[in-house]
Image (cartoon, rainbow, N blue to C red; front, side, top):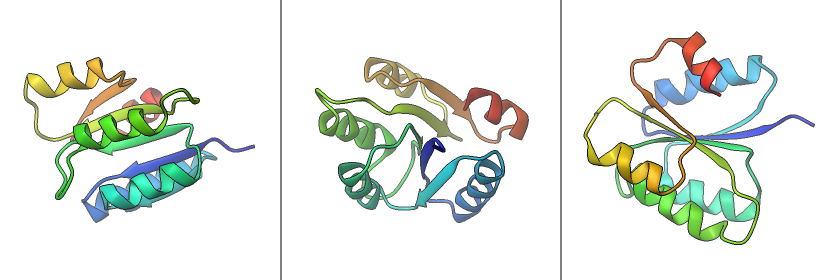
Length: 117
């Protein structure tokens, strides 16, 4: 069975690029540009990996990660990779506290991204 990946980013070009790249690598990919839609999907099905952008409208990636951990409490946890183009000291620290599995800075090399995945 193909591993399922959810990509959450408000940049359409990132969603399209990662969907194409990860699908080509054999993953079952779901993309959304909305944090609330992502939460609805996570409540309905399990994703092996969730890739989150940090800076998004309505709910940022850290808040989304907090909600994911709350939803999955006592259940199997998805691996989570954070991607961001805006570095600040507090974001990686908070992400680590929430059990993030990877942190990637934008722009990124596709080979390095796939290696992290």
